[in-house]
Amino acid sequence: MRFCLPVCLLLSVLLADGSRAQNAPPPLRAVTQPEAVAQQFSLLGATRAFGSEIITEVMVDATGFLWIGTREGLVLHDGQSFRRFQHEVNDPDSISSNGIPGVMEDAQGRLWINTIVSGIVVG
Image (cartoon, rainbow, N blue to C red; front, side, top):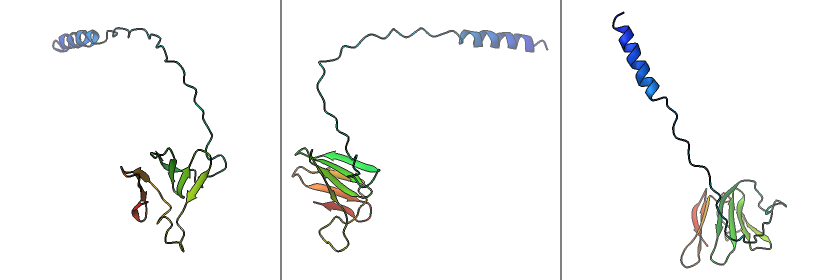
């Protein structure tokens, strides 16, 4: 019992020392914004042009076209309209699979299309 009282006092002092409040963070200051740039936003896919609600990849190529990979194929948006590329069983020139998890463009402007089933297709 004699030992318990000094230990409790020591612990109380040590714990009380660490319980002080930290210094308050500095107040937030206003950040001036550069001159606003007019931006135009469009709702893409409102007419279900993608064919899928799940988008797996978005890439803009060197010419400014938007390539969108989905689970239902590859979609090209040229700023005006959509063109959908899907696997067609009887068309050997179609993409090899509809699941598109990745699209990249190399230095020569060729598209490298990653498909879930058939690997990479170069277009």
